[in-house]
Image (cartoon, rainbow, N blue to C red; front, side, top):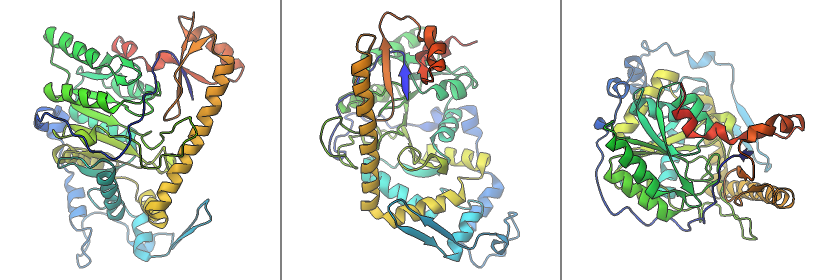
Length: 420
């Protein structure tokens, strides 16, 4: 996807496994951050009973309206993978679980265990953070915002951000975005401090939530450097701000040079890896590096925050989809760690090759008309047009030529701030 609007550079990628931590500790109290909905949100009583007895083989199930497993139509599943491998699922209990309501608190146990182990391996957070399987990041983000923000509350975000967050969360729920300036290394710390200071001086409730997409940022493609993450985390710690780290492109990092694909190495530290305060709510997704149609992801957070997300999840969708959870785990189990790394490297190589084609074409055709930074992660190229005030001036011409782009204004947080 090509995005047209403001500027942002792709930062250098950090290398190695997480080793550095934030220096200052201001332990968070989520009770002070919850919205009224967050404070009132409880575990649905019927779901609580169902999940409490989900592992009991001796219980007489007269409680939850669960269809009997012998009424389900599917007896087995055969998955044929592109690498030629076949996953033959014949275990009666697994096949039944795939067709039943999700009856466990944090998701299908085998997949939840995989996500928790993977999270600790990749990020090694220093606190008590736990994992919950979700129906993808969009739904998780909406729930997290509802649990933390009241209508009329201000939320910190990059000056250009994911359009769906603006149009589907911020505007309809009545939140007020405070745009923070970006450069080639991510959020500019001095801009974040300035926005916080100005807001406090106005006498309004200080912003207590920062939403950020730190890798292959949508729409700018920016990659936040480790140094910036450390400084941003420090500022958020000192001002008691919750960091929502929405990182769907984390695995899609690459270099346009001749080097090999990163796999899981060289992806850099995350805000979660720095999280000595336990103030980070990290959203991960299977969508970008496996399959978006599965609608699965996981959220990692402090137990108090995660509990509220769990309550909201079970109230709204009765948990993530059982069928896709079982299929996802069987796929990951069949591949094993090395098989998943091989797949991720292939994805990184594919995106690298596509990015190189776009970069070469832009250099040949657009050098006189636009400025941009070579992509280093994700799927976006962010163009700043020269001598053009508004890309909408020729948007219709692009459509007629069947060139599909996204106007930068759709990602502009300042436009959302003035909405209505």
